[in-house]
Amino acid sequence: MSKAESKTVDIPLAVMGDIFDLKDGIICHQVNCKGVMGAGLAMAIRNKWPQVYTDYMETYKRGVLHLGTVVWTKVDEALWVASLAAQDGYGRVKGQVYTNYVALQTCLQVVDATAVLPIAIPKGMGCALGGGDWAIVERIIKENMSHAIIADKGDDTVSITCFAGAHHFLSNFENSVIQLPLDQGQRAVACQDTIIFKTVEHYYQAMKSNNILDWVIISQCTTPGQAKRAGRKLRMRFDWDNIKLGVMETGLDAKFQIPELRDKLLATGNAMLIEGNSWNDTYWGMCRGVGENHLGKLLMKIRGAIKAS
Figure 1 (cartoon, rainbow, N blue to C red):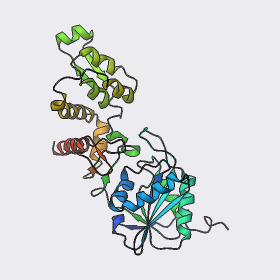
Figure 2 (figure 1 turned 120 degrees about the vertical axis):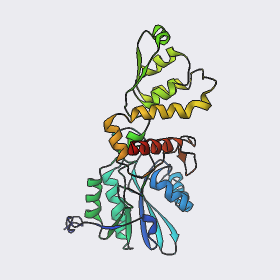
Figure 3 (figure 1 turned 180 degrees about the vertical axis):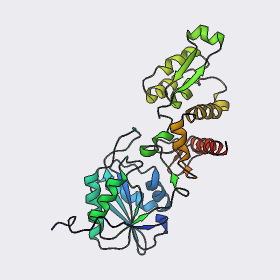
Figure 4 (figure 1 turned 135 degrees about the vertical axis):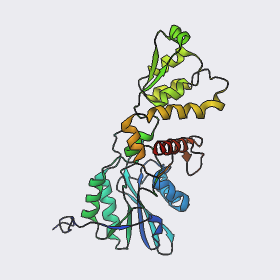
């Protein structure tokens, strides 16, 4: 009988609170194979125990960080962190599943074979940044681990640290129609009554310019990535640094007038919203634990206003 067949899979897994409350045993978290540990729980672990990142990068630089690899780091006398390489790449593509379930199963079997207990696994591992399905991940855990504890702080205390996967709706790249009415003079130039922007990113990038024709051109960009690249080429208005926060808030206000997106924002409860990233944006978000997180702050401000309305 195989290991998976010998287990009872319909018994609920044990649950604990904050994963950082574990003092003895193994803390598991999922990582990619690209040498980037810049968001989510991986970033929090990196900040708390820098040696975890050092060991991860040494494995990556040696060329032996492959799917199914477990990188071990001893962080205290009786506490280990197991970095599970269960996704090859990473990104922000909506609907993209980066988690490799076969690799995750391999990693969990390796951890389980150590017989070191307890073993803590964060609820939703591989399902936010990794884009996986928790129902599938939970089944893999049950089928491949003898004693696993799910760490779940609860919706009110959790931090959402990357606007991807299930939380892509918080990203400025999320589809959200933003309609900008034009005055009489602007209509004469643009030959249209309004300009429709496909995302907040389209709107924000267009507003860098005072030229209405630039607005039209950026509104016609197929993707928010194209709009962002086009915005970098604009002749920027002189007062941009003074108004960009207000421009972003206006775009976000319009976005979350859409009922479906408004409901999703409210469903984040009191979670801290942090635009974690690996591309060194420390103004709108946080990179490696450092940054002003203005996008996250604006989202929480709008969420609070919706609750109060």
